[in-house]
Each structure stands twice: as structure tokens, then as C-alpha cells.
Length: 215
Image (cartoon, rainbow, N blue to C red):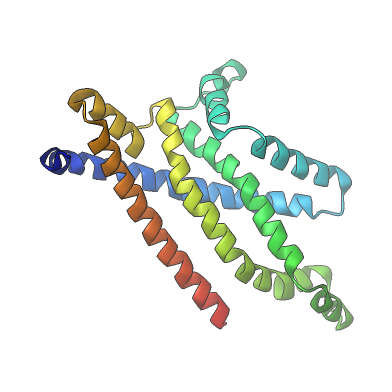
């Protein structure tokens, strides 16, 4: 292993890591928005809205994220959607993880004891009051861990945008392989950085989970 080479190039990898972090944050935020809207649709009393929610989840989860990125970036211009690589990466990965977060959020809401919902209604609370004061606070505690799994998966999924030439961590590793002919060292360095990101994120998720359980 060429340690000297890795030490020379790691500053450039750290710059690329900032792009990876930016991608991860933006796609997770978009995913949470899509997940919340998707869960609301899936739990709606309107069958047409439920159908739209189910279609979103089925289509997005049933097709590879890489294909979705290619359609959005390369095919978008054919229907008047002109996005640069970074924008396409954020939107594509955000909508993708949103489908998984939809089921995570919906599952947490369903898991809340129905007896508490009925008791709240008996006490005179409206449906919206029951949702805001009883269901969502408990569901939020239940969804922290599963959402954490989604977030960690999303950090790793940012590597996919290297296929549309976003200069993030994986793309940087590929670029330096072309000039150094050292694939092991370049991918090893990228892998260590991904591992560090996942480790820090897991610690934060565990901290939030402990805080939520205390309340």
C-alpha cells in the first residue's frame, strides 16, 4: 500500500467529502419532506390520494436509483427539465430515499397504540389534535432508529452521482485512479472516509434516540 501517495491526495478527498456531505444533507431533507407527504397520502381517507402515495412508493422502490438519476439527468432535457449534475443528484436521490422514508414514517404512525387514539377522541380531542398531541410525538420516537438506517444508506448512495459526473468522494477516487494507477489505495481512502461519516452519523442518531426515550 502506497501510504505516501494517500497522504498526498487526501486533502483533495477531504474537499470532495464536503460535496458528499452537502449531497447527503440536501437529499435527506428532501427525502424527509417526500416521506412525510408520502406517508400522509398513504394514510389518507381518500382512495385516490392513497393510490398516488402507493404508486410513488412502488415505482421509486421498484426501479434502481441509478436508472432514476440517468432518466432525470440525461432524459430530463427531452421534456423541458434542464438540471445540472448536482441538481439532478439531489432531486433524484431525494425522491428515491423519500419512498423508503414514506414507509418508515407510515409504519411508526401505525405502530402507535390505537387505544390511546380512542382515549384521546373520548376526551373530546379532534382528529388533528389527536394526531399532533398524541400520535406524532410517540411516532417520532419510534421512527428515529429506522430513519437513521435510511440516512446511513443515503450517505453511501451519494456515490451513485459519480455516474453523472458530480465531483464527490467516489468520483474523486475514480479520477485519481486514472492518474496514479493505484485503485486499491484510492478506493481504500474513500472507503475509510465513508466509514468515518457513517460512524459519526450513527453516534448522532444514537444520541437523538436516547434523548427521545428519556422524554
